[in-house]
Length: 419
Ligand SMILES: [Zn+2]
Image (cartoon, rainbow, N blue to C red; front, side, top):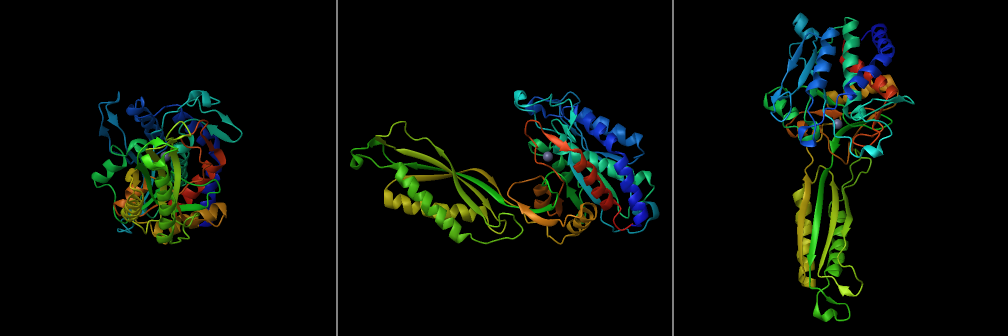
């Protein structure tokens, strides 16, 4: 990209700061909550976004709406605003991959209103931030992506590849009428360059390419209750559970001990966390004991192998103690194949971030789970990145305005890559 032109685009983005704040404010003011959470869906918000896009010169807008009689509009809207590249205009670069930025329009409900300092849908601007439900998740990046595309369009630059701003519904409650619908419609192509700006860190350096598997295992140990002065008449479930807990803790850490430098915490974690109260009084031997393990496992291991190892220890403890132990995975989310750290989208993104922020960004993994996992599971490479304070789903959710504007510059740099 000719530096002078890129600078003009980035300068335009700086000048659009107030407009970006106004736009984000407008979309925050339309609650796009799922009907299952008591809301009316995303329709009105998407109408506003599409109207904005048309007004600002985007003529290529594709819809993938899904019928839903549970909302007043009867439809859950999915929309792609295209910034068409040279490929179509000049018929060159026929096999040039498309660049897709996937954001979501729905928001979670505000939760306890008393915990908010302002109305969650009033979009209060203060202290360089804009407050409201959906400000960070996912309004900040949705706004930044639209304004980046507009700045490129306004400067009459043709990207070398088609850039699609994919805005999906239904992300907060399972994706069926959102990204999964697009997938079923055959929208995605294997060589698409996909960015999901829906998770990040306050310093904006982490480009997420990998996630750990997650399993919550409930461990129920059954013995026989009796008076604590006569242990011979019962069987202490709590002692057996403690034995199991310490043995399994050691066994899992020993056996699944690989370090992966991609992750800030480079090991798999196996943490005994919640302990359910067994008995109210001190002088009774408990006949039942319930505890939980929270396991965050590097993608190289399968959750089945973790659970099999836990079962093996449980069998041993059952034999030694005469109790019975059941293992119940109450939550189980298997990690997908990571996006390679040298995949084209990751390399392009790292370079765009560094050119705007000069921050030495790096590819890495997180312990949680994002919608990019759906794409990775289906064999698409996706990178996850944005600059956020991680206030999503909390009371007083906010977006830092400078993060939005600077991330917008990263998007514009990405959109004009190779020009
Ligand atoms: Zn989100």
